[in-house]
Image 1: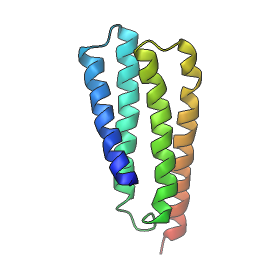
Image 2: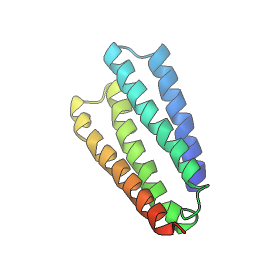
Image 3: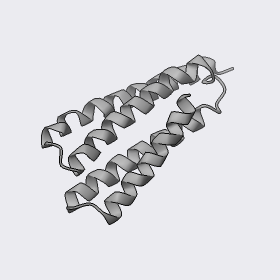
Image 4: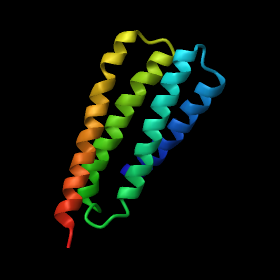
Length: 117
């Protein structure tokens, strides 16, 4: 299921980038959409890639992959929200998503280190 959600996340990232390029109301909104879309797309592809690595299949993928997915959705989602008019204080939530992504990468690295032959 996490792989299907990662694919959906990638689609959302592409849509956000397209909206930023063609429909954003301000340059700041376009930049938020571009930044959110970039991070969300990179992490969606990373989740799909991690699924192919030995040592991260099954439960090992779910935990770091879920952190990457949730973190990227929080990070990008708050930027998207501000781009369409949410209050600027939403920007204070954005680093929480970044921190969750960092934890996901650390967990993935730890899992890969421990799975080496």
